[in-house]
Image (tube, rainbow, N blue to C red; front, top):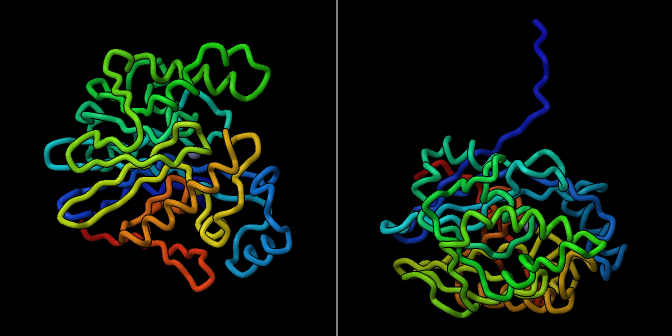
Length: 300
Ligand SMILES: [Zn+2]
């Protein structure tokens, strides 16, 4: 019998524990990013060598979108909200957060707070449903003051570059949350056991969230690193001259957080790393790093 091939994929959801915290990585989909403009200060020979050594696709970078729900026992928190379904500016393979939350048994109306690493489209547009209403009707929205200033500035709507559509979509996405906005500065402890750490550079106010429970720690790093091989091998490589607000600062933030997770024994979560995005950084002899991904392990 012949059956139509599906041409579809869904990584779904994956639970992991950090101490008493029950974390659920929720797959929002993926971006197939071309190499044009990516890692502009990379040595092309070195990049090709890494692609070949690690059997990476030669013509594109698969980037997953990995929002994570953290159930602390007292609160239900979401770190970043995916791309949503209001825009296909990055392709049409995203926006599956609602579907996969449901599959994981999580009701969006139970989310108490959404913690934003930064307000780029693939992290913030998923705050709303296609009709513009809040996907998380009870949730407070946590965002750094610097990030809010950068990505909700109406003056950006008049710019003649990517910042205009990004800002327009973000203004729509955050609109239903303005009366429950919690702006903070990196370094603040925003909730019990939830510490914040500046990883500014890719965005001017980008923030990482460190969760601690029973001596175990995990950090949700947003876009401080985009790739599980290139970034650990070469923290000095910039991500993108356009999409990084400050590429040099972004590379410095990447080196700093890699050092911090190794020195302090913190598990690393990369929003765009291969699903579910969780693993451990290792420092090797030359001072660069290697990422050891946590395989999906079906044990709650
Ligand atoms: Zn991103």
